[in-house]
Image 1 (cartoon, helix red, strand yellow):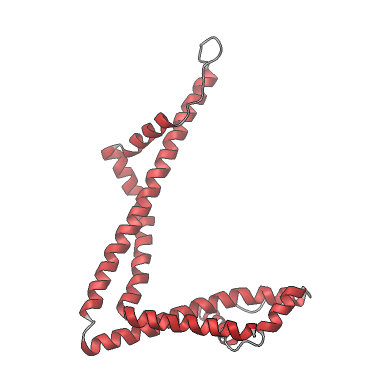
Image 2 (cartoon, one colour; image 1 turned 180 degrees about the horizontal axis):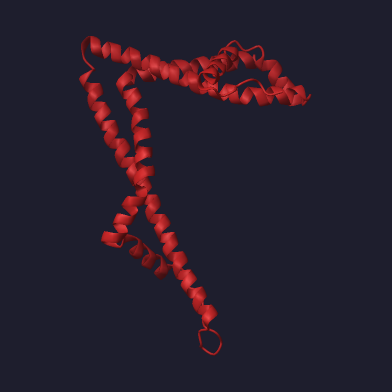
Length: 216
């Protein structure tokens, strides 16, 4: 019974991908992934230049550092005689440097998120317009069928990777005689879907050159 439930869940996930892909269409489905990848790439490559630009032209990091310095508790660096020693001076400067470093991290993180959001959304808008152009007549039907196939394939590949990575260590653990792992593998061995998923994972391993043999 647990194996039957697992197979039903796997089939339901693939069917869900078919429905989502049919509603989105092939262009929008590809565009959602391409937009995310483009947004991540833009954020990775341009967060530092944009952060430096904002500091050099608008002193944004300095402003954030001042904002933090005004609201964070400042350590007392004076000694009992009211004289500030060289060591305490160094501590004060280190504290100021830490505040500036934190401010830069905050600005850089916000720039990264903003670049990721803006680029991915603008790219998604372009893909959406393309999807609308191909949403009529026979082109629209082909776009929807292609989207259903694409989303189903994407989910199958994801499930294959999960199965391919999870089953070998579980099988190796079962070989040691660990009771829960033995029970789980006895149930999974009756699955109709898992052998196909693991076969797909092994096929991907052969294509990419990454070994995917079960661990022993």
